[in-house]
Image 1 (tube, rainbow, N blue to C red):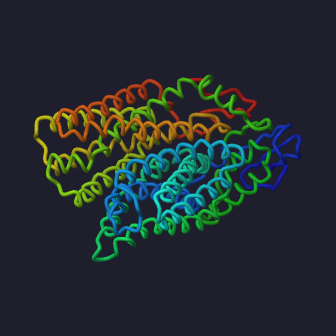
Image 2: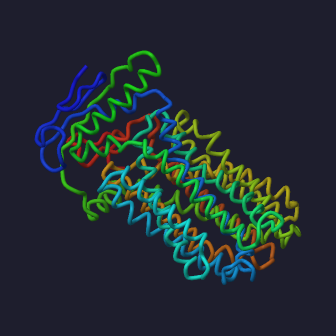
Image 3: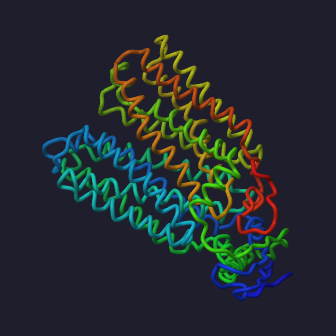
Length: 509
């Protein structure tokens, strides 16, 4: 048992020089086993607190995106209380939400690396809560547009702050499945959004100027509940450690260990491995760019491929989803929400059921196979659609099969970029690739796929499917060659922190 310069721990500790082992960043160094202690923890109730407090926000994102798409028709009606057209809702407002998410990811991502995970995931959720609540009060189009942008601005920041915090708090043996399950929970929100919009649009239950407002207000209420739970989530001890606050990190980890030992009734095993950190000032944008695109350029290519592939596959299916069912299969427009709820369930079960394999079979095999399988299945769907062999039900079943694998693959893209770059650049790396994928989906998607799926020609819709399938298969092949075997490994082993005095354990690929 070793102890640090700060609070003693039953399982380990830190030793420091300069800044008395627990001061501000800049100067001196410290040697700590805190990362090893976090990674050797067994799964516990404390970890479920992290999952609920941090992970459930994706449900809100899914709820937001789905509700707005489904209630566009109601908002444009004269009695809605809002002077806006359906095209403005699905066009201008949707584009502003996407733009807000991209800007927010980059803005908050930088601050998350600089000021810490906890401070930012509290602020970004508060921004989302306020913006979506104010959206429900819209009486003018400009007000609706402004707060759709700010809602996206908060959600974009959540992706950077939350994914970095989750990966740094969850033990290495569980990191893959937890990350996939959390990112996949977006589709639980999509299911809820589909069903909620059906209820909100039913004037037998709610007046036409009230129902849509309550859907946004519900999002704010859910965010408030999550905010209350999130108060109990600590700062990342890993972030504290590299910022010279190792005494605080020691106190947090010791407290977690005490809780888990009390629950289990026996002492935890001794940690293995220590990390020496040299305290330094803030990392500049130039250093982040050199690290991500220079030292880890192969990993940057991997992240780029994964995000672009999944963005285009999802746009190939979801853009014009309702139009395809209505135009080719005569499904009434007010019934398409049920079909969307079905494929949303398929999306959720992919990460839920396949997630464990990313920790056991491994990242490279699972990432490449989920991308390739979803691409090949979409090629098959395009062929059947072209032959006229599908009905609305069987097409939806095909989409479910495609998205079962695609959702696990897409979730693994977020997992990948959150664990393959150094600690000091983590949130900014997540933010960059998230913004890249979101922009590709929100800008390129409408330009390419909306026109193809709206022409009413079978061949154009088939081409949309084939484009998405091709890019997904290319990303799968890139993953087969470049994916990092990060399963069960400490984040510091996958990508050594820039502050570490030890050489990288994985090279610069």
